[in-house]
Each structure stands twice: as structure tokens, then as C-alpha cells.
Amino acid sequence: MQGPAARAGQIKIVDRFSRGTWKYGDYGEVHSAVAEATGKTSNDVEMSLWAGMMVFNGVLSDDGKKITYWDTMMNELGAFEWMTDEEFEEMKNYGDPANAPSSHYKIQPENLGKFLFITGAPGLGKSTLGHLLSKMAGYVHYEGDCFDQFVNPYISPEATEPSLEQLKQKPLIGIPQDRVDAIVAGQEDFMALAEGKEYNMENVEKYYIAMCKDIASERKRIGGDWAVAHACPSRHLRDVIKAELGPDLIFVVLNLSKEEQMDRLRKRHGEENEGVNELLGNMYDLYEPATEDEENAINLVLTNEMTREEVAEKLLKMLK
Image (cartoon, rainbow, N blue to C red; front, side, top):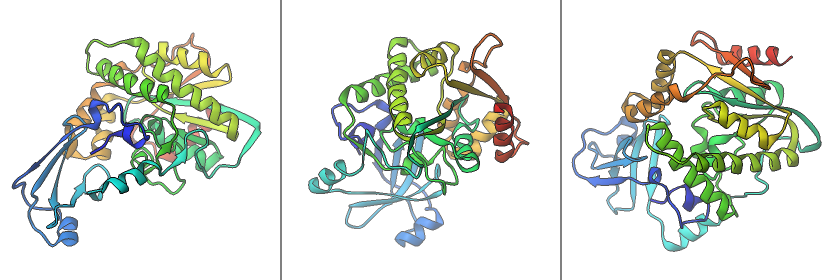
């Protein structure tokens, strides 16, 4: 199994969250969709992914070249298939150019409109809000999680769960190695920060600066109103981003109670992936709301009673 760095055509570095273990044995009854697809009734493979925080059970095909499983994150049938060396080389060369990924947006570089950066703790709906602003008000939605995964950051308007859509996005090719290095090192130290371990803030800052360079380049290329959706926990890091992207940028900081956040995470990732839910939930206290003295930053207070559309409409009214 290759990690995000391999998908970028750069296999020199693979971070720990791209690694996992597969075991062969008896792992209980299959999901009904797996049974229908394979004709088998028992799982014989256990796949531990994302540093052991996600575990899927699946069925190995008779020829040993395919594992079929039920993806509890996406709520759909998934599969891993064996590749020949030739197929792997072809896959590495498949994708959009990193300096001009494809999108469904109108190219209007002469028109630089509103510039939003939507942030907040995991599960609060950053990606969903960016996606809705795109559908309801014509914003370009730049999905920050796609930057992490070396894939196209422009989510299809047909997506039903934009926060998970990054897993299906087209890979990027031709990513500079310094950008790959900044992402991998930054993710490592960001996760150390989230886990309460020793970390290097300089690497975290370099990660956000690398993202800002891509955002600035893409905004200049495409134009229009923009809504970037990505996690940025602290006032300090918001200031780093503002310094890179300029005075037009407005931070929209989402706020929700921790209890309601955990309810959202479990609905999105499933009760089976409690390791992921706990990790993301533990990050809640890292996220700082916008303060009264912070320029170009607004708090958007949410409740789980609000629909997605109501949240988007509330923000659009605030921006007016």
C-alpha cells in the first residue's frame, strides 16, 4: 500500500499515517454488500490503517489479487487490487497538473472577489459550508484537506459528503519536492501537537505557508469569490496565514459545543472508527475562537439544530 506521497509521484517520503498492517485469519461475518459482491460469508483479512485508528475487515479473492471490504467511513463497498509494476507506473503518471488542477469554476482572474478562510475544530462542517457557499453563492471552494492528500482541491458540486470527498479526488502530478516535504513534516508536527507531544512549530508554520502559496496562485489563476476550508487551531497560525494571503482575507471561525461536535463525528465516521473520533474530538480544546481585537476574523456560532443551509445563509448575511 502506498501513501499520499506516492500518489503525488514522490515516493521518497511516506508519513506514519499512510502506514498500516494487514492480517489474514478469521474475522467474522461479512457485510451483506461484501457477501453479494464476493459470494463469501466470512472475512479473512483485517486491515489496520491510519496508524491503527481505522480497522476494516474484508475478503481476499481466490486469486489473491483483490480484497473487498465494507468502508465504514464512506458507507460504501471498497476494494484494494494488486497492481503490476507497469500499472503502478501508469497510476503515478495519472492526474491533474499541480499548477493548474481542473475545476468546474469559471476562470475570471480579472475579478478577485471575497476571500474567506473557514476554520474550526474537526466535525464542525468547514468543508460542508465551503461546498454550500459554492452551490448557493458561486464561491470557489478550495478544500484544504485535499492539499494534505496531494489531490485536486476542487470538490464536485454533486458531492453529498464533501469532507470525505477528498478520498475520491483526482491526484496531482508535478508537485515540487519542497512542497511535499513541507506537508509531510508539517503533518507530523501538527499531529504531535494534537496528541500533546513535543512538536516543532516552525514545521507547522511552513506547512501553512506552503498551502498559502498554492491558494494565492490558484486564486490569481481562477479569480472570483473564494472560500478555503481547512483546520487552523490558533490565533497565532491565523496571523501566519493572514501575513501570507494579505488584508483581503477574512477568517470565519466555527464554534460548537464539544458534545455536539462528538455527535457529528460519530455520525460522519461511524461508531466503528472510534479511534478516529477520539483523536479528532481530543483536538477540540486546541481551537481558539476569534477575539474582539482580532482583525478580519468573525465567529460563527452553530448548533446541531441548524440545517446546513441555515448555517450558510447565516454566514452570507453576516458578510453583508
